[in-house]
Image 1 (cartoon, one colour):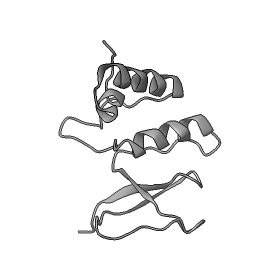
Image 2: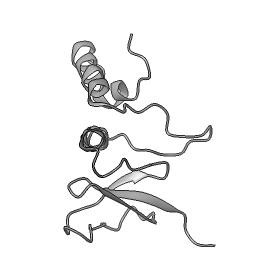
Image 3: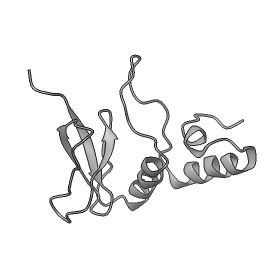
Length: 109
């Protein structure tokens, strides 16, 4: 049985690739030769022309949030717009909560 594939993205080229998961192998973008970032098996890439969605994705991946399947379905809440990202990061600064946890909150208190 072949290994399950997962998503890796190149944020500068705004493309994603499905490849077998191997945490020790460094992935390289075939377009720009930059490093690919691990996004997770439940990742769905936004359209290439949607720059705001890719900027949102950049913030999420750099904060350490991925798109991983869980026992109950998908990866949980992830912000879809820059406005949602800014609100959650402002909340994290005010409350002292880690940015990754604030970004994963569906509702802000």
